[in-house]
Image (cartoon, rainbow, N blue to C red):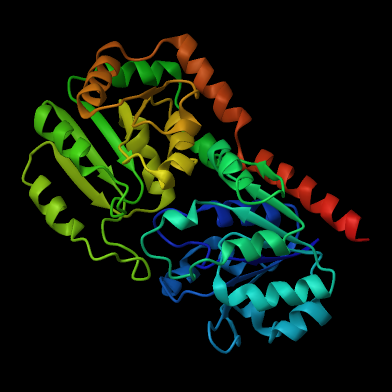
Length: 380
């Protein structure tokens, strides 16, 4: 199958937004040919360091926001010289978009005219973002041009129903199978980490966005000097989404505490031993429209390392196994304390392992492809 993927960022952009590359990896495993088109210049210099960059079936193209000109970003993409060539010569079976990028609207119009089906995969509540470099107020057009629409959460399914009659299939985020295999810890190893004298509370993911709850984080660090708090993730914003807040100052203040470490951004595989050695994982997000809509990918990865999760009130994960919801910073600390003191039982360990096995990107990709194949057959 030939697939065109539209995204604002390149597949390996740091911070959140890993959904496009997770689906991309599954596409390539299936032998699909993919033209991945993006607009932002952020972190493009990092792309050659990723293994998939050289995959013979992946063509990486950066499209100029103003002229629409194509720039080949890897050797395989050198033949994709224009939209005309892409649509009339290469001839994709379908086009999949992940962000409502304003400058792609004309391309989507042309796809509709040429009967190339479009699947819009809504990966966030875009209206809630304080900075929207991809272009504001374009999502309605994406939904209208799409033959099928998917989204990440029940919250967004309900939200979308208020503005369109088009149905949205709900496909949450997940965990990569190979990553889950590397993350795997035996129950014996879980027991060993639970008896260590010094306990570790871990957070992984972007730390700079406005929805990260520094009030909760500061409260935990200041009240529990006997725990080690490990913060893994970028605290400098993407140049495209800098909203002017100085997160560095907050980080500098907290670095003065002996019980907190800010590792900054590390590779995905480097994350594994840190999760495996921790005792409790956390998701301290401010509760707002963006976070209520989200499907935190980190939650699946925490559970993959058999880590109990303490989170603020995020509706999409409240019923996941070993996920505990706090409605105040005081309750958040109580839950962390409780989980550190009692650890996890073997039954809870099995429950998490079963959940992870059932929630892989392979399964999500198969569900997405069923929708795509249905679109294609309808067009034929």
